[in-house]
Length: 482
Image 1 (tube, rainbow, N blue to C red):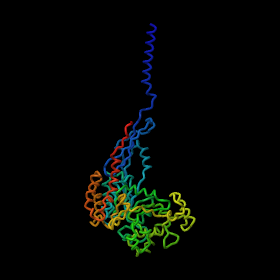
Image 2: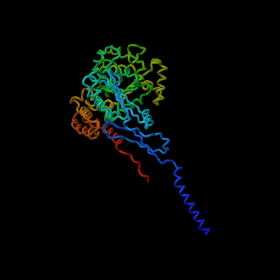
Image 3: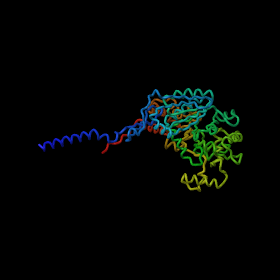
Image 4: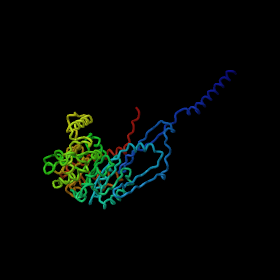
């Protein structure tokens, strides 16, 4: 009997222990894993989709500090519009306090690229096609600075506002009037092409912008603008601008054969694609052939034009060549540019930065960074035979259709690319509505000088589209454990 009682007591105790284990044990454990999705949009105007990166965290819920999102009706949309050269932009403001911390971190990390263009006359469609090409493949947000005559300003605002729903998260824009701070405005307007001289005054007008990419209206991006923007990181401490050579072969280059004024390097430079560190330009005194002490950028422009106006052919581009001819090395305004000790100090600083011997003085203290020809590919690179090795190897990165080749039949290869981007609807699939039609139409140009090497025009476009497609559509799944 006593043994039977002991068995019963032991069974009851074991049952109580199990109950305590199941009901009380879980309370001492950590909370279950919480899945937190952090949206990191890589959206382009192609409408291929968004990338969503999900991260798992093991923190307790009360440490995440992520309350629920407010309903969509609580989101506010603000529109800021001002005329006369001030910003004309749309900004969407979200009041999702639940994602406040995540969005603020993204905002601090986000870098905005600045792109400037000057449009006068019948350049509306051409400029908008350039803007579209920049948006198609870009990763970072772009702030467009559009300088336009009064009749065009309202047309730009109207047309760009029609894109807002599809790609508003990709860009902002400001529209400015054509203004010249020194000299005769009418004389500046007529220099080479209408309003082209406006680019010379960008450092003066855009005082709050640190760095900027300027392009002509007849430029098309065939790869992300981000890649061009990264050249800023390649600048050493003395370089303040970047351009491509006007030609690759001196004996057939224009400047080396016909120029009646000083120019940069052996073949001169082309200013249709110009990357600028505006801060460095503004704080530099530029040497010249008129005043030994040097002049600031704004003070230099008008006297330089007055001296050479009867000797220049390509207007503002010629003036830029003259400026950089006399300023191959950059010197801040607080230094003495002619001081040997100062120059040696600058060379030593750059030598450490570039890991070059300090003795290579002149090669280090360059004020102009020259990028390869595929970043400013023009008809001159193919109409006399292919002479841009970089484009043959990597494909064209930026297409520059000067000589009006987008609007005539002189160089069909250039026109085919322009028409394909111009006609492409933002929401369509890029391969089906852009690349395949471009590839098909290019077959009609293979008998022309510029069209006989199709891969020069198509290689970078296809590569860029595949990269965008893979990032948006292809999911990389970890292999199962063995």
